[in-house]
Image: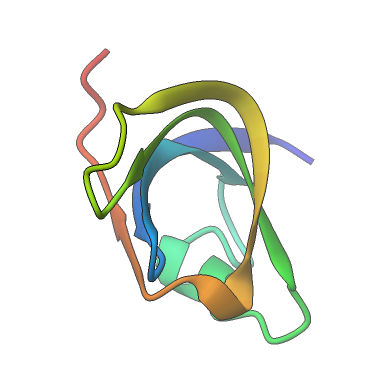
Amino acid sequence: MDQRREPVFLETDRYRIEGKLTLPREGFRSRLSDYVNQGERDFFSIEDAAVTPLDGSREAQQVGFMLVARRHVRLVMPLEDAG
């Protein structure tokens, strides 16, 4: 399956996360909204992420890969690709 990495912004109750979500390049569930609304998907895999606590307790932490539980995500939106 041909894939693309979509820059996204996610927010949970405790963290702001910016990173790249892998999506199908085209066709079924290639739109971000379709992908995140799949009921059978329990986790989102995020690459090249910056994780920042919303309470400001520390600076952003860079991680190469993380899984975010879908049930904790309050907001998802695409980011403009800066590069």
